[in-house]
Amino acid sequence: MLAYEPQAFCGYLSYVQVPRKDQTAGDEAYEYLKKQGLNTTHDAIVTEQESTAQGYYLGVVLVEPKEEDLANSLNAYMCAEGLAKLRSDDDLPEDIQEWQTFEDEAKENSLGIWEYGNAANLNDDY
Image 1 (tube, rainbow, N blue to C red):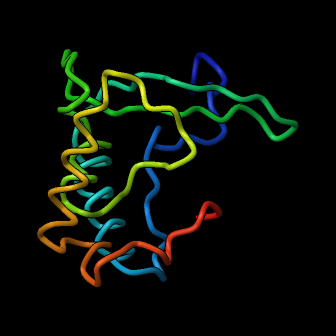
Image 2: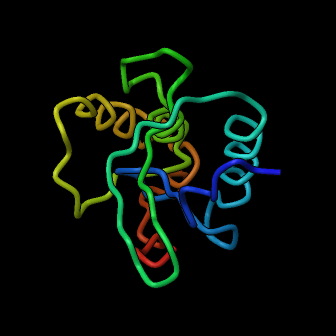
């Protein structure tokens, strides 16, 4: 039995947009997140929180335990693999400017969502 009520209703990866399973590279992103996110331990750095009638929503950056460099986060790795793109509507903090380089390299190498040159099929309501 839990000693405390759950602290979040829903969590999402901060600063990135991941394709739905029915979009280009969606299945690959899902499997990557399942393998790397659920089968290993990460520290969650909460960057945003929102309260709604349904509960709390937390935006997180998932980093290796005791890691402080956000370039070594699951969020950044997904950008590097072409399995996520940076949100265009976010003002990116200095700590994650390097993620843009990861995304640019994924585009250059046509990885994941960039396989066909762009990720136009990703929209904000994933």
